[in-house]
Length: 182
Image (cartoon, rainbow, N blue to C red; front, side):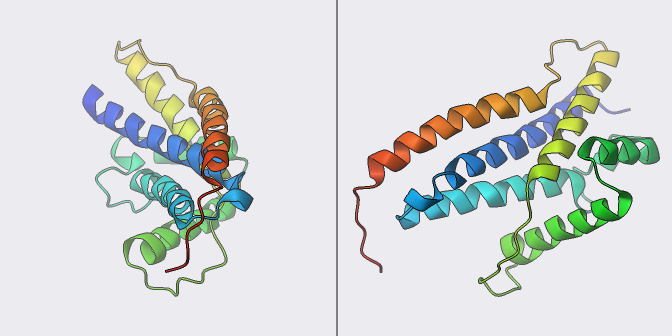
């Protein structure tokens, strides 16, 4: 039987996907103003962490943190997950491969050249994270733990709004800093 603590750790991983995706998107809106390498690095790190955390949950089946370690009915879960994300089984397989290959080649092992031009899109990662989060909260509630907000999509929207305002201010307040290439 899965424990409350195991489910809570999984919830935390999913929240990290959402936070990093929102922070990335908020800075991406400012990409024209991101002249300093510092902001480019921060932008890249948010993107990488969103993918890395998503892959901890949805990546390799053998991972201790994989969703299959908690969900028992894999077929029903996968079907509902794909429906929520609005994708077919083949689209899921393509997306999964894109995300796990990016993690492996660009984040973990850097096996491909750094001039990569095809980056994963985070929309499906956000939708699947929200679906699994809601599933986990329902599981916790069925175990008698009722103090969990089950709407990660609302949290994402609120956090994106907040980080967008922050990104606007920080980019505006640092645009005057000129850094010579080193």
